[in-house]
Amino acid sequence: MPPLAYFLYWPWARFFFVGVLIAATLAAQAQPMQGLPVLCGQEVFHWIVQKHYPQLHQAFEATFEACRANAALGFSQERSPYVIPVVFHVVWKNPEENLHDSILINQIDVLNEDYNRQNADTNNLRSIFRHVAGNARIRFELHEIRRVKTNANFQFNLLSGELLTNLKNSAQGGSNAKDPSRYLNIWICRIQPLMIFGIPAGQILGFAFPPNNLPNWPANSGAPSPGQDGVVLDFRTVGRNNPNPMPNPIGGGNLTIRGRTATHEIGHYLGLRHIWGDGDFLGTNNCNQSDGIDDTPFANSQSQFDCNKNRNTCLKIEPFYGSDMPDLVENFMDYSSESCVNMFTRGQVNLMHAVLQGPRKQLVQSSSNLDLGSQPMSHPMFYPNPTEGSSFWVSIPPEWLPCQLSIWSIDGRLAVERSFALLSDREEWLRESLESTNLRSGWYVARFQKDNRCWTTSLCVLK
Image (cartoon, rainbow, N blue to C red; front, side, top):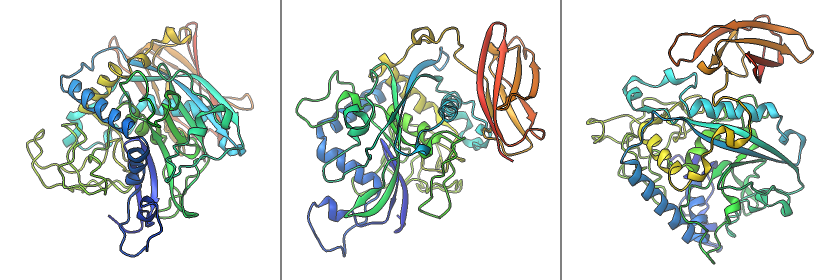
């Protein structure tokens, strides 16, 4: 591994970990710094869970093995979408952390694109992997936004095993979960840098707890309560239209953010591991560690937030493919750049379906159960959004055709007006390019009208 910096996740954590000798902290005593191993961030998080929550860790492992066995039986991808209601908790101290509704709505759009293979970058997948690309058919519907102004800070503590419990506790400056068995709770805050002896050691972008099939958390284990279940995101990683930059501690400048930290973390929440199998406690990997998914090729390490399609870190015959395969850097569960990842495999989809029919089955609801009126399960969307070029795309699901589109500037000026006809008798999305040359920089409100139904969304133009 490179000695200076790493972009890493543990199965339920995503963060940068700058090269610091963490072993002294893990030993819980003062030791000379020379000769000690440099541990990556995923091992730090792994150590916290194994050290402070051993029964919880065992429950996670048992759940994964059970779901993997069920996934091997196969689940049909030709079924109605799984509908998951989402509750956002925006816990903010400084004004920039109190993200606008449009950013949260855009994050839902990103999730629905990625989990239904409607993302515009699907064509970037190499041809050798297109036959294994899967459509998870999971729809996320925004149920509620809770906003909490706080004076608290949210930071991991290696020695105590603190996992941002105050973020999920209203009495401690956070926000209590809403029935985590029936709602996907996503907390958004500024996650403070990881500190080692007062020295900044890394920036955590997000983390999530994988499913646990036990009705209650283990007694007297010190494990988190059910109210901690869900996903945590740093506010700078949310949505494609987020104006807050996330500095890149590896190469300078800022990270490319496309809202896919949430895609990755929800993958963990639904039972997926990293495609390289995570290795052992020291992060070593001999190309035999597996994520439990047959159609994700073996890899001995993660990508470094790049898009190197020449990577082939395990020179071996893949049983599933019958030949040696390159690393699947386009997979959402690698550490590739957010502009590079674009797919889940069919095997990963089967495992997520096993989770949604098993330990997280209460999470799946219908739109009518969410009191969302007559909204369809799919909605029109724009991409890229924000748009910076001379044109952008509109994508409209068949249940919204035919329809009329009107786009209004925030000062009430009608900027675009279009009608779209039904494409065919088949259930097929309409995708059409629209010119943006006459649109000035700024925010626009878009209204799609079909009969007595209306869908309103936002569009950001950058010039």
